[in-house]
Image (cartoon, rainbow, N blue to C red):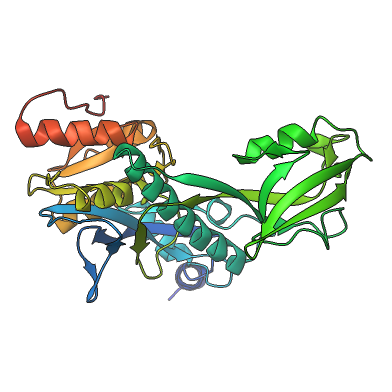
Length: 352
């Protein structure tokens, strides 16, 4: 073999080896794949996914499935270049930058904790939306979620405290608090009436100028608040390790279906996604393409799609899956009624 031929052989082998090694180099991307899909009308193991006490419930038929996205990769467990390239070629997989799922400088455990908290919040909002649609009365308490150390509320307010009134003005929702405090000047003292452990207390808490640049100069006491619902019935939702807020719409429909004698599915296999507010507004979610694949593969024929996700949903062209556009829980119920009875408009995601 000539020296030139030997050099070419050596170079080719070297390139091949480097290519093979390079294919297994970790890269900062995450692979999103179709995840499990679960029937809100069904069971998790031997336990009904939605359990309701304190009100009459009715038998249900069909499916109202929420869908999930499974991910591979992330800090400390990155996918390799070969996996990323293979995912880019698979229409059912999305390869996204790592920061899209795990923001920089935020520990993975914190991201997972936030997803768990969002799931719990979505369940509460779904219950509120379903009861709102059923005209069942609910009340809302404003409670302390956390207290910022180094600010006036530290050592006075505690997580779980209910804010009953401020400056003798009754508090009904979180904006009421900021509205009253913003009427003061930094350095003023604010009078809080709270309920802690079932007992009423009065506290005087000072204000300081906000350390947040976005709210520089505004008076604050240093507390994060949330709204806690008081329902006339007890609703428990069991989903295992699933996190995030995107199952809210399907939870609300599942609760509604169990509380009404009318079977809203018409025995059909319906899946969907979307966040939900206590008033029943449906919001967009991520991973719509992967969720539709999961729904179709599970047997769904109808997919409830948030309006803001319609463009991406239509672009993926899910064969065998009818996309029904939804903006509200009320609209979703109206669409399901039209599908079941054959009467009325059925809003669809617009074609490209």
